Image (cartoon, rainbow, N blue to C red; front, top):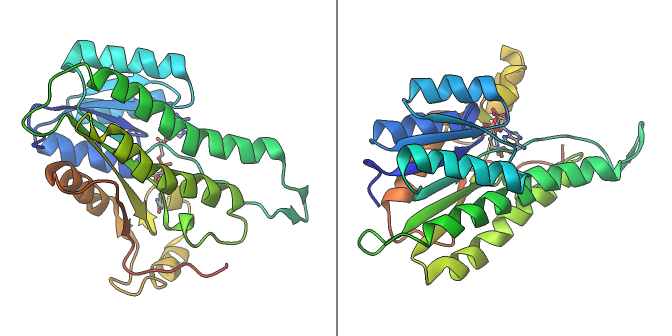
Length: 252
Ligand SMILES: NC(=O)c1ccc[n+]([C@@H]2O[C@H](COP(=O)([O-])OP(=O)(O)OC[C@H]3O[C@@H](n4cnc5c(N)ncnc54)[C@H](O)[C@@H]3O)[C@@H](O)[C@H]2O)c1
């Protein structure tokens, strides 16, 4: 599918990988809806890409419905959904601070996995009501992580949430195939985003050195470029693509 004049929704579009995707897709002529719970960042990115800011929490049915309707009023029904919103959080199952709190585990699953599904289903609900363009109606791209495969110590909830995103990719693609909607997932390795900006130069270099080749942290632009390619390549469907410079994470 060509991105020119196509309405796109990007969750977590106010920062990092989502922000880079907003820029990459806007450069291709797409109309961008930036969905983020951080209002200020959503507005900043939306202004830069001449899109629309949509302040919403991906876990809320109500808020995402309103965001989709607002974006539709401005740009028409969206044909591309990019799920980038996500949170981290590290703790051992039983550690110095005691047992892993159930609410914390549930919160990470709720944002990363259930939030992804919430946006996917509500986006698809609207998209199936419009006609396809050629052989396609639209595209959904989710964001997992290499932690879906090699979760490190402390990543129990994060890995489980991202494993869930990998797991829903094929059934979602099969389910929506009759509607001509493709579903793919990107599993990034280590990318330089605000998540890692708190680290000093030395810590960043040491993380980057763990990547076999190229031996550095990923640039969010590289993530945006893959997202654009997935939209443009009609044969890519039901797949999770690792974007990681061949890194395989160690236990710690
Ligand atoms: N940066 C990396 O190295 C890396 C590696 C693997 C996977 N990922 C995944 O990529 C995605 C983007 O990460 P990033 O590095 O750009 O992080 P980031 O923190 O820069 O951006 C995440 C954005 O999501 C938004 N967000 C969080 N919870 C939300 C919610 N409930 N509703 C709406 N918006 C919400 C935040 O406000 C933020 O703008 C995440 O899912 C993350 O798990 C990142």
